[in-house]
Image (tube, one colour):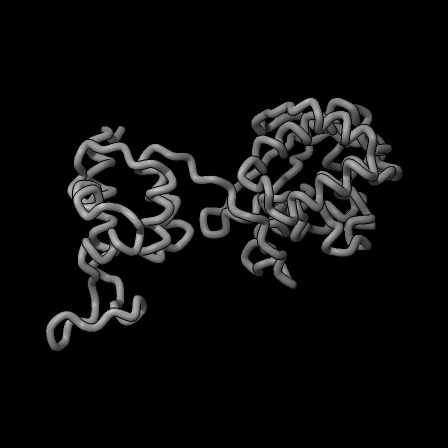
Length: 278
């Protein structure tokens, strides 16, 4: 496990390398000398980030200082770091990267992720964004919940379906417990989305449409996701029992893959296969 000193040195080396690679023209700065067009001076980065030159120098040198999150954000913005690079800087300084605002869903699910979701058959599988919008699914999931394809993309949100769709509610024999648990997980994951328009609109809408949601939301319960057993009462297949899992693709962390594995010894697998043949 890396020590605090190791992380400080890595943070300094990383920032120095990014500073040296920066294009001066991107900052409306002239070349250094006659031909050097890359690399900013420490004092230039410090000035643009609003920090002292001495402090920024110590940061790059891996000195024992405790930069605030706001200062690191300013440095990351000044260096024009990508989202993964920004998160890396925060993690090296001991900060947990905040969830990013729920991005608009693409017109189509990324092809490689759709193949991954389809490969889970006969298990139902789907993909959700950090704000729990459903971005794609496989045929087994559509058979489990036939209404998913009829919902307009802006309204296709897992939390909203749990609290407002009567078909979903009828399929969940433990709806009260499940809905509260989902809400606690959503709240834990969406803390960084507070104040973002999509999150605010979702909560406002659900408070208006569901008194049960409003009451549960005001309880401020928070819980971490854990794989668990899930039971559905399907109108055509009867009781279906699954093991609920969630995966995060390393190359697309904004889309989480949710998989319902048929529970052995329950008849769920044979019923799913029958529905898929249908």
